[in-house]
Length: 453
Image 1 (cartoon, rainbow, N blue to C red):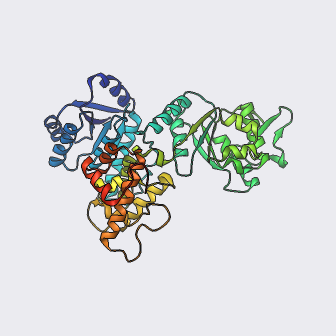
Image 2 (image 1 turned 120 degrees about the vertical axis):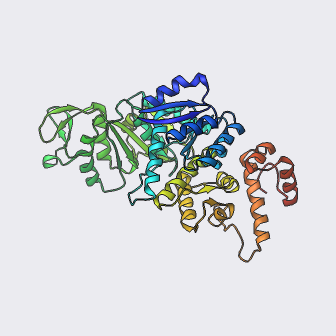
Image 3 (image 1 turned 60 degrees about the vertical axis):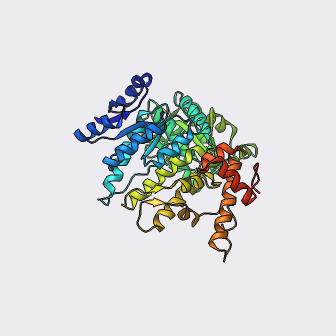
């Protein structure tokens, strides 16, 4: 059984937290301060969970532990209504940040992932992708998690709609993982990845003499070689369903309706309890209206709809998400984890991210690959790889360093002000400066309060 040292957990939450962690084979040692923690860690090395409810005093505990035991693996637990603490946790070098209520599986997965990362520095083993975690520090993602929890309690179809890179498949996997049948298969099929005949065979398997239907029973035939057969009692996640031929859509709709099929090899009728999910783009409803997706199939798929917000609408999640991608990349290169400076993290949190989390991952991959030595990623490292407006280059060719910095400051401050709807106090905190300094910079750079100028 794994053990964690949990510091600062409110007494009222301990019983529920212990139950969550015990369910994933993690035992808890409770503590309150750095002195207790250091004494325990001298006896046995274990990860530390640090509750940041007390803000500055909790962060001081983290610094005290880090000063004497630099290699200790530390995680933060924060209230999702305090996104500023997520940023502070990342800046304090926390490996990951968990939002309340604490999920045992999330903690266990993060510990396992970090252990693999540590091993990666001295081996050539492949690092597992860490992108299966949902970060729920924002209100938008808390609403998504509420829908995921609701969906997990049912066996009905789910449509997850969102932009490319917004985490549609990760949300579907979260629903699957929370089900009582979480040990069953989660199988993904890209309906645009092959032609219609190949897709038909992939889903249903080869049919004798092309006969799909058992006319005596009116049931679909499904081969033991097929994706659908292996997805029984599990989840079938469909991508690009609008690109599936009408014939394939009709067969899927019939199977999902009957929940029973004939096994091609034996002729036996067997139950087919397959949970269908589909990841779709924002224009999916137009495809349905245009007749490219059968209405009877949509009815089976869309009992529950989960709307994935784009990353630009869940900026509170960016610090923890960026830290996760950063650690993953460093592990894959077998180098010590790098850290983001406050200014670099603030810039990442303010960018438009039209490509969502995929774009953020690619950016951090490029930054880490391009940096020689050192543990920190500064503002200039990020500036060398981004465009603030998503189009024109950030700096004009031939501009002096002073001119480039002035332009960046103006654009950056305007972006943060827009993000916080002109609220000076909130914008100043995000920028890491005093209100008076922000007012002074706005006047000198001629930045409007309400929107980008």
